[in-house]
Amino acid sequence: MANTIQLKRGNKANFGSAALLQGEPAFTLDDGKLYIGDGTNKIVINDAASRFGTCATAAATAAKTVTVDRFALAVGEWLFVIFSNANTAANPTLNINATGAKPIYYKNAAITAASLTANRPFLLVYDGAQFELLGDIDTNTTYSILTTALIQAGTETTGKLVSAKVLGDWLAGLTGTGTNAGNLVLLGADGKINPSLIPHEAITEVFVKTSQADMLAIPTAHPGDVCVRTDILKNYILQATPATTLANWVELAAVNIPVTSVAGKTGAVTLIVSDVGALTGLGTGTNAVIAAADTLIAALAKLQAQVTARAPLASPALKDTPTAPTAAVGTTTTQIA
Image (cartoon, rainbow, N blue to C red):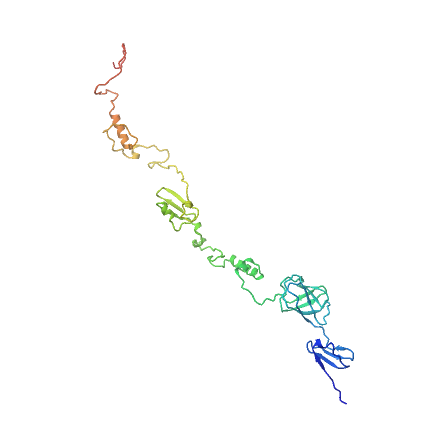
């Protein structure tokens, strides 16, 4: 007599009401489990705990939950979990099969916000107190350009390393001639800075002009430049731009310099006629009163004429009708009588 073996199959959702005869096998298509009936129950013969689960908890919710078929929480147990939503909450926890929320740690520290990216399997191991995430938590597969700002700020690990390299290059003088922004200024073979790298404010130029208009029209004047005004014998320095504004030019105070020599003589000088040249042009043509408008030569000529017109003390030759005081009666002196 031939025996007939029936194999039932279907999805797990429809398997609960199925009855199996003793020795009758059944197979669930969606979870791959094989069952044998004993006349009363359905016994799983490939019953191994699942090591994979998907967590659909919202990104901003720290308390993550997941259901994993036949997984029992125990020290040393491990599983892979995919988070459907990237985590944005700090200090997230994981509760598997309602066994209690346990912290998720990485390198023995609580997970921070935005550390769990979406749709990537994470390997978790339970140590009796928390789930320790193994492997690399950084899942970034696209990289932005490392900018100068990041390097200078040192806000990224790579930025700090590059900053150290750039600093080393600067100290070694390997950044060029100093013509670019941020570079060191290197000295030339003569030990001096190239003049092209020195701002105009550090170099004073002197301009000679004959009028105020010419001074205000200096096109290349910079603060610190000096203008010599030959029309008024004054000097000005530019304290601010623009040079076209008169108020930006400040008059330099005159310095009183003592006379160091007269007619080629130094020290205590005593002048003689030869020191100032011959006085020519003096005459006796007039003895008029000296006027304030007279030149020195004209005044001396008048003075000479007046002196010449005076009678000498010895044997004067008087003219016209000279007069003298009448002597008192009885005067016997040499007084004119």
